[in-house]
Length: 279
Image 1 (tube, rainbow, N blue to C red):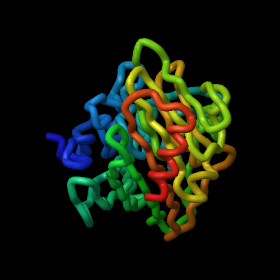
Image 2: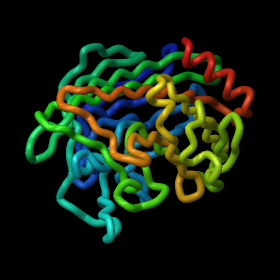
Image 3: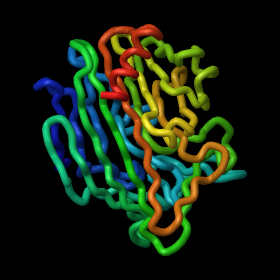
Image 4: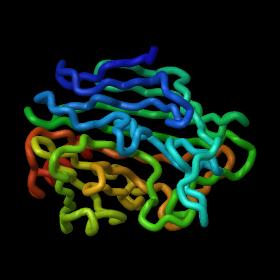
């Protein structure tokens, strides 16, 4: 049975964190948040949808860590395309340094059949912003625990244009109409995908998610955005070249996501970002 904890915002449940999931190896087992909801109870995540069964709510997923798949599903092979390979890794929960109703600090091990590649410290915190919006502050720190240089790649690096996904990823629910997506200066999937905007909003029928890079390193990563095919937003750790991590070195990324009831406009989204990132 999966092991879970509940996250609450001002006493209201807003997220369920599954930190020891029971999943098949081709899903690249890893902790995830689902369901995540607005303060008024609207679910804004999706788990194992038919179009991409390896999408697991909110979490950290990387399709290529030294050739190992921590994303789930098929692996993109140059000159061959998406291919089923026996190369799936697992993110294993090691323990909590801090665990409370509004957040936690967790230690994880990224392992393959050959042993551990990365150690992760994950810090998650929940903060109420208004009566209809709250923020999920999500930081992950990846440390190379091997004795050799390790690098992170993506399908884009391996030959698939426009597919530089890998890092923080949020799978939103699919609705009758595709969500709108915008930044402070652009609108539409084509305009915002691969941009390095300070924040990016995804807005559905009765909800809005606003993603903000909260460190200089995070802001340098382009956004990975899908709206028409399926609704999802994530970071791109390896966009134009592989991301190297020296032995003992650590990569840190922090993304703050605003979860709001209703459809926000640019001004409202920007104001909540300012409040959330400086809170």
